[in-house]
Amino acid sequence: MATPTLTTAERNAAANAVVDLLDNGTGNPELRLGNTGLAAVYLTIQLDETNAYGAAASGVASVTGTPSGVGSATATATDFGYFDRDGTALRAGVLDSPISITSGNTYQLTTATYTQPAN
Image 1 (cartoon, rainbow, N blue to C red):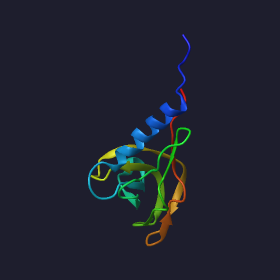
Image 2 (tube, one colour):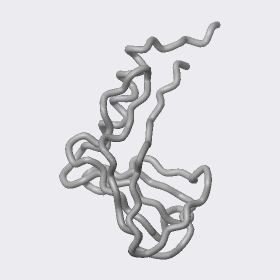
Image 3 (cartoon, one colour):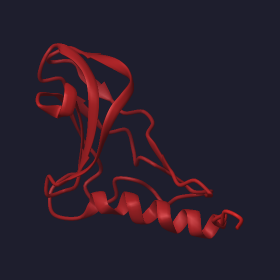
C-alpha cells in the first residue's frame, strides 16, 4: 500500500492546528531554553500574545514578529520547550547545537518555523 501524501491545504491546516495550541489560555506563550529536561531555565522568550505563529504556507508556519527575552543565568542551554499562554508544556526537545546564554543579555528570536511534512 502506498504512503498517502498530504496536499498543501492539508499540510497548512495541520501546521496551523499545531502552532495554534500555543495561543490557548491567557498571557504570553513562551519558548524556554535551559539544561536537560529544562530543570533549570536560562532564557525565556515571550511569543506574540495573540498569534505566536502566522498562518502556514506550503506547510510551514513562522513565528510572528521578533520576540526577545533576557538571560536569567550564565550557562549553556541544551534543551528547549514551548509553553502555551497558561504555561502548559506543549513541545520539548534537544537543541541542534548548544547555545551560550549570558545573564542580563537580551536575545532575539529572528526565525523559528514549524514544518508539517507531506507524509
